[in-house]
Image (cartoon, rainbow, N blue to C red; front, side, top):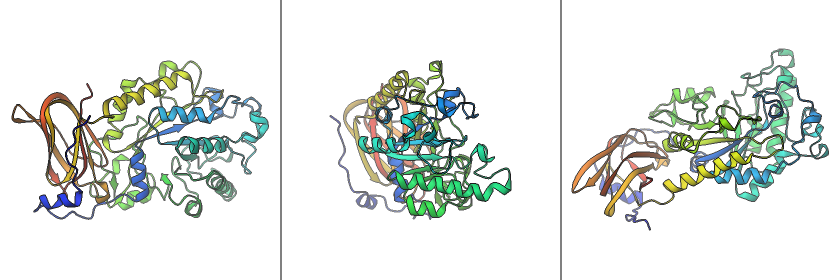
Length: 434
């Protein structure tokens, strides 16, 4: 059983830390961004004609008659996602080649012209129902471009032939409308590589609370890599001009930025491959490597987006499911049961462990509703009556996981060495992970 210090309301704790400067105008998350932070882990799900080709991008070499994931089971996808703690599935409903996994009225290059369920299958409809059943949120990736229209990778939907632009704009707007209006609440929309097509009215009407990655209405950032990590220190704000560019990354992070634009860290389980292909199990990331990714994404206040790759049967391979299960168990083993925890406002916060206790991790969380205030800190342990420094840091934000050499301590002490206004620590927890 954990030993927890008495949890005081943060407002009450402010009285014990007088004299600190008032905070500047800090960027703060919207309620939708705060809910996104709280998920911590999401599942990406990539299935496309290129799965049948052993490629990463569809070259249109697979006839539609060959695309028949006859055993496709979206319930299995949801169970796999929950094994590693995902709270949402982000489904690639349309990738760069333009193939659509829903019953679209915009294109013949879609699931309706495959043998899958006699041409009546609708993978997005199945997944929406399964997510509802398993308590998962549903996000969609609807690529703004389309090779068939000459709007290739990185185009944002701009056609190489300007004469086709207006027609393609209508097609894409209809595709996005279909996806956002037919399948219940969509909580996230990915415009990979930004989007030059005006879809603002569609988003406002059908997905007003959805998180948006890239494009002029972005509420999320890509960190700039597909390793699933963010640099440290990790600041979740940017200047307004960078936010409005729609393509800012970790390079634009600014602790004094005026727009909260957090980073979502995507990475494949197969290193480095987003779509399934035969004979790729040697590319599976190990649990140890996934834990390193976890420390550098979730452990730095961002959200981890870990990929899942159904095979040509439409199932997540058993070897992948095993890794997901072991990864989820390891997260729970390390961080499922705190030794003790507390919270409070002020420059110094102590956590009483009661008796000498071995500790090797501390989790810190700021009350980011009031901005990312801490700019520098140190953590000390009371060992045999003397305070010993165990780690230091700069940014905290939504969450910071610190690991250090094991110490046997009776107390831990957090000290903010630099902050904007009064530090507000929503949670400080001690752990022994071994």
